[in-house]
Image (cartoon, rainbow, N blue to C red; front, side, top):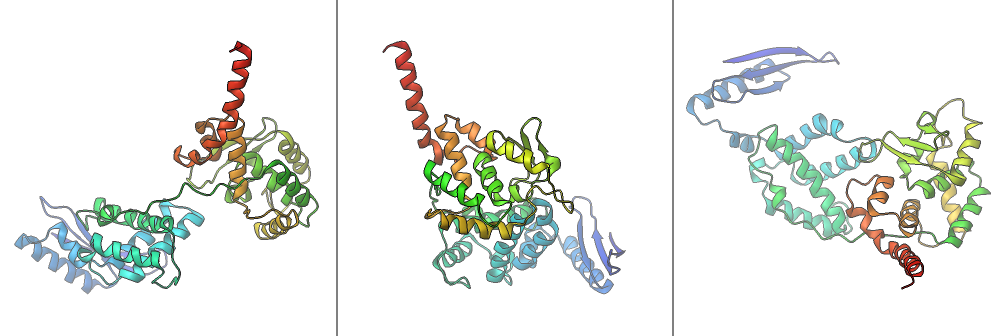
Length: 350
């Protein structure tokens, strides 16, 4: 009923995988660095099966929370998230592991999770400062994803305890956008700054609402100057997105395409660190208060709303999967609505 398979990894290390099969039961497998450990594990599981005591809930007693986190981070996370998103989730899961690592899975109840979430929000952990409800929700979401895999795929648990933990209420989100005067002052400072890419980066961000990662990862093969379109291959939600470019932005791209860097096909090859420093200096020189690079994205969305774009159109341009994120700009559409109604009344003669 039990088989021990000797395996050699890419690094040359030898492992032993124990496999147990019995009619009417799922297949049980586990990998060990020593053959004696694999044999002992198989012997114990076989004995449990004979006594009818080996049930899925036994995993919840045998496994630890830290073991679950480690398996997810090593085997699942690399295939579910990319780059900076994966790094953020890993940090969040490492925090949970630090808090609850030695606990048996059966001891992880909604009350335990809620208690540690409260400590996170109150700044009673190593962060030593209060965290926002939004941050607490992200930490819960990261942990919930792990438990879902442990329940559905590994059968270590029968239910996800995070599903019974209340989420905090989140604000509608920050909306800071540049008015016409601020925009022109900023572009003027960007044009005369020390960075060769800054003006184009800011103009492109204002024209498309692209995220910083999308902007600095853009490559010339993804730019179609003939049709006036760029394609973001690697986005936050892992979906390709095409965005049109026109006007001053398209003209500038055509000029930049004539003199490209030989070492790379990145559109903005100067580097994010240098451009970010130049951006902060330009903001200060333009005397614009309370403004961050990501607010260029808010500015683009706001301009779309004020131009009469629908929430669906704004979501398509920004790359949002749902319309909920776009509703923060809906009040700005009132300006376009007023204009439309005024034109209708004037034409009809009401």
